[in-house]
Amino acid sequence: MGMEPETRPPHDGRRVLVLDDSEICLEAESQMLMMGGFDVRAAQDLVAFDRLLESWHPEIILTDLHMPDIDGATLCRQLRTRLQWARVPIILFSGVDEVELAVIAKSAGADAYLSKNAGDGYLDLPDRLRQLCEEILL
Image (tube, rainbow, N blue to C red):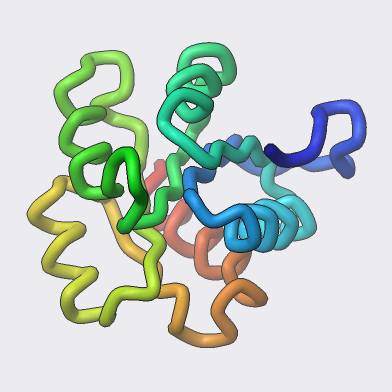
């Protein structure tokens, strides 16, 4: 899933690993973030996610909440127990009600959350993620 590295536009942004089980959403998220200057890799399932996590070493993880093989909150909890990934910022990105999403993100140990329904949805994703990076990453 996603573009091959040699076909990606030039970037100078942070490395973001995106996990979403919806091919349409994953492509939209990836494209918007790449156009926003992020270096993006995308995974549609847990196997691909784990492979990219180990080989590419992202600076930020953006994950959907509801997926068939693992939900974003459980993934977050699991990554927090793995020493190598315990400090990588994890952002839950979901269409769940924003109040509910905030509670889930806090209980899972996520660094932040973004609603797919807030603002212009995918269109302002790069700006919203960039703002979170400024808050989370020093």
